[in-house]
Image 1 (spheres, rainbow, N blue to C red):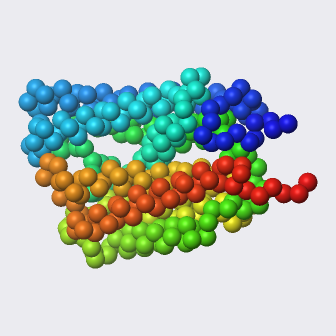
Image 2 (spheres, rainbow, N blue to C red; image 1 turned 60 degrees about the vertical axis):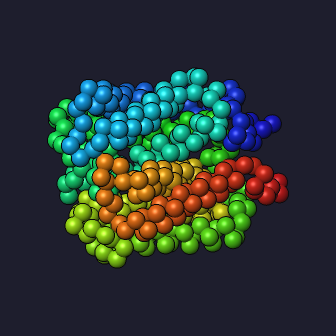
Image 3 (cartoon, one colour; image 1 turned 180 degrees about the horizontal axis):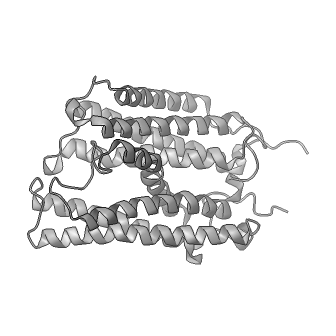
Length: 334
């Protein structure tokens, strides 16, 4: 009797897959999903106000009307997807969403926001704006009303916490085979030695570069005065999550240490999403310079940096998805 433990990641949930986790955890998932959707709705409201205001002729002085409207229209669309994702985590219809779009949206959403939780906590002590520091934020230089900044902050933090709590429970319910047991229960995952070496090389290059910048290094930085404590904290946080992701994939691939399997699977999912999502978001900014945006790095350095980040994120996710398939692990003798 399979008991739902051999359901492929690409499938949809069946009733047996959601049994066994307990009513308490199901309640927590629902609360986290609704909280995430409600929180991000505040951010969405601000973005809609900004688009409407721009259409009426009120645009920050350092942005052209077209750039500002396009940028905030994009973030409106991303916010709508995030709200729907939060509701999908909470409601029954979320189990019927096809796996590929669900996994992609959850991967990028979690990658954008969950790794920012430690950054947001630490930045409260060093100061700074969560949408600054060369991150390709959507804010202009004109001061925004305080209620808008509160809504943006609550939107980010609430969605981040909601995803951090609700998403692992949802994925455990829907794809238990990827999360049950301990690392190495079925032997090491067969992920490919050459792929793992390439992944480790990519992550090492990025982590060393970001750690060097976080420590105050300026090689590759075109505008050192724009980095500041906030920017160093951001790149240091990126380095940390890149290393976490590589370590998680290595644990799954090696079959050790014997920790609960959900820990490296969840951390690898979040870290790979962070590498991909933030790099994919920043790359157009580095290339197109909307609204007079000036990257902290030299353009060539930033393009190479974000290209490596996208590649590393995709490679990590591919390794985790392969490890999540039951056929990727040799059966043990009974």
